[in-house]
Length: 156
Image (cartoon, rainbow, N blue to C red):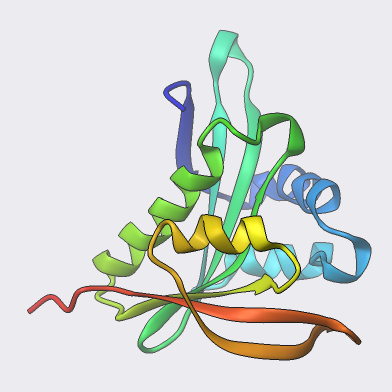
């Protein structure tokens, strides 16, 4: 992960963020260009990207979209291009979400994960997320999800 940098995304990243969405999610689950543009400009959302600037060229490999709620941050999207999986990029983005939540004094970070993807659910659990609620037909009829939550220590 040392050659990768996590940084806040800007409007100029729309093309790359959209490319990652297209590569990582099936059509019914991916965000539209309009929704991604909104995420990049909304005061209630944060978008972080993982990129390399090696050899003078910029290469984006992952994206994290967070939505702000009164007590929590919700991971709306976390995606890493298939060619870069297994290099710690997803974990770095996930840890960035937890740091951001602590900085904003949120109590939780929440997300939804496909109930059929046991390895993804274990991956989140290894960082401290717990299954809190089963969401029937969340992604589509018959495609259920787990709502997961990571409780953060309360800072005074």
